[in-house]
Length: 533
Image 1 (cartoon, rainbow, N blue to C red):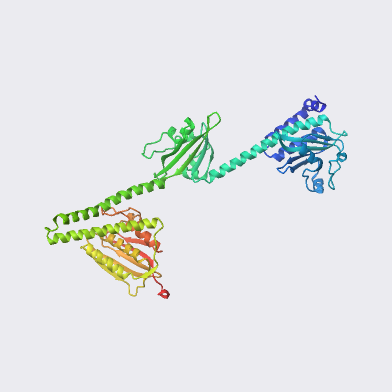
Image 2: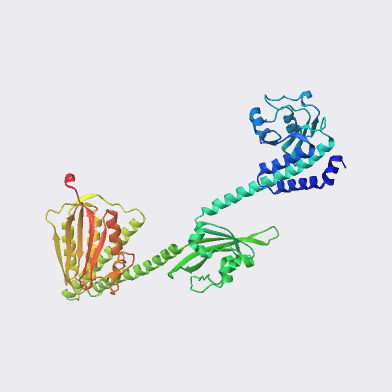
């Protein structure tokens, strides 16, 4: 074995220094720090005054140059670091170790820049990863000898192998870190909640804010998922309680089952059900063993409520349309089979049934069409001037004709300016409110239709003399499908539609009521300003 290698493996302090540096370089995640350790060890072991390690970039020139033995002041005086010309370029191109007793005597040398310290003997050793040229060691000014030896070259070539490993480790770490950051960015910006748990115990490896929002911090301990067994409770949509082993994430962890869009229900602190669509996908290694589970959580509560609303709406429409259609069908059938023999009074009653139920059916369809257009964003609002008093009088006459035990009272402020908006839609609002007043005051009485001015707005009011609306129901009466608990027929869409149409005009609607005091609905819409008339 060479003399230098004998020293390396015979001298415990040198051997320990070698092992310490190599181990540190292999575990150092900062490539520059790892390579600096190795180049300093190379200079020390071969007795060079100066040493450097150059990293070859994609353009075939030096992209980084780590030096040792040269002070910061000397480096600043020299100027820019070398890019790989002259002898340095020879090593980059030929990738063969090179020893020179005097740099200046080699015709391939390009000399030194001003202020560069004098250098004579030289040792260059390539650093390779397979066929790839990673960089080179450069050592000069062998101390105590006129040139570097074979043993020096062999020792530096050994260090070059470890330098290559340090580069490989750093690249792998950089690639892994880049992939981790990419995965983290994807997870953090996903609309679904995401958890990644290690198998088999389910330790939490990663999650995102959406998962914390959906499931709550308390349900995401870093420890194994089994810590949730006593506190976590989930149900199936049918109400059947999940056993802990049956939840999707546990099935993926324990038996490697892939679960896609399974619905479970968790109740919040107030006991309200929250519906989740859950997917759990096992991640397997090359041997097929489950190493982790990725779980996705999506809050589908609104979708389930929308489905329920749709079902309720279809059921309600079926029921509400059946009543006028049955009446119309019965009256038409009676006319067809017994029209000639019926007394005049009975024929008049059947005609009124046909007219009233046809108008009722027409109003229901008109409300549904307007609501559909609003929800689809296709509701067009005209902005034309129109008089509100004729609308109130017309609706009042309709109510008196339709409801014999009610009388209409129209009150309009003197000099009321024209309204500005969609006359047909505002007529629909007034008619819906008047129909509501008649239905919810079954004992009859006055239906008051009034209009006045409040600044830049008209205030239209429709009141009745019915039993009034309990305070606990007043906040809900403008919700879809809500009907007061009086047994009165209706789809529960009239007030909801009124609010949408009024808001579309830039106004607002509210109710004033007390037990036994009737109810008055008021809404505002713009009126034409004096300079616009």
